Length: 478
Image (cartoon, rainbow, N blue to C red):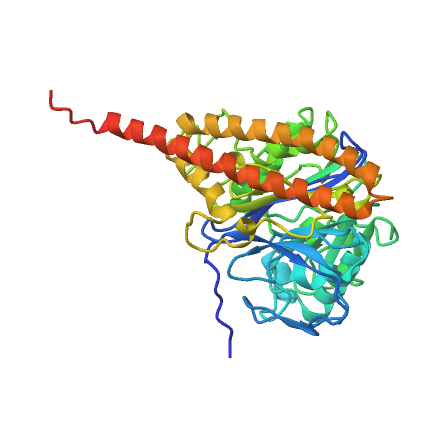
């Protein structure tokens, strides 16, 4: 019997930015992604503990996929939709400091799928995070486990996945049901993608920087997806979709973000000739990535919010139906408890606030764990979402207040983080329990204060909206 899907008909779409450690302003590695899905699906924060007797089988709630699992599993943190706990984990670190972002929806070409079609019961985006992250100890191991599962079970759809640890970052794109390619992100460059496969070069002899299905090139030759007489193998040309829709939905995001970081690159927004990996003009930091995920062609003719144009053809990075945006950062010189850090903004990043989630914390305040599909006054997701809804009723009037308020909170939090980390480093070797308590207390305080800020914004915005509506419908009678 076919399992009925419970999710929305809206597509799950994303934007991914990955930055090598020599390209960041502090020597950290960063893998970041926005998850654009359905604003009605609240995201809840989940915490799982290490276990020696975990479930021996994974059975998806939202697809017909199932697979065997090792009984030993690492603990990890996840960002799951309220109606699918333990599924669609999205982003987080496990207890040995490996981070994973899953998934960027991508599309294989119809021609490639003619020869290796997706399998309905295969590995789908909803399952990947939760069947991979608890069982890997390095980023490379994550690629190897996922690649083996793609080959064994097949893929149900197209996806791109990133893995990050203290030494490297890898990104994997599947090519069709059973083929895939993964590339190690160059330390001195960054990578940007938006709902489209980006990889091109593949050197099967260079195992340090490439991993792939064993027959990736041979399969393409056999099925006339690639002709060696025409030049070097190009993964994108052989396997990926590139259609008219991509020219307005995907190209502009890559074009806009590369223009933000590398304005000297002579990109043409109408041509998919964007470099796969690029060098930024200035080193990239967390603040730059916050700005990038808030990008909507700001102050240009293509800015849909400035012009109140929901039919704008250029798809922005920041859209209203984003459920969460995360910035996975690894600072290898620090203990993993504070060195592995996930900055998360619930909802639409442009009108949201990024909050630091340290790998070493053991719990989240209750409001971050109880959102559902209906607005309420308790859950964190809906308290942040209310600010966005009010802001979008008159973006040009209300967005500046939201942005200014959250920018101030983020700046203050950045300073408090630095102070806390200095204190943590003084404690963690000789007084580890005190260090742990310090970290947990700091996290709880920041997350609770963010809710207070959001609630205050809601009341101020509602007040202003009341004044505006009264002016429009005054009927004073005098």
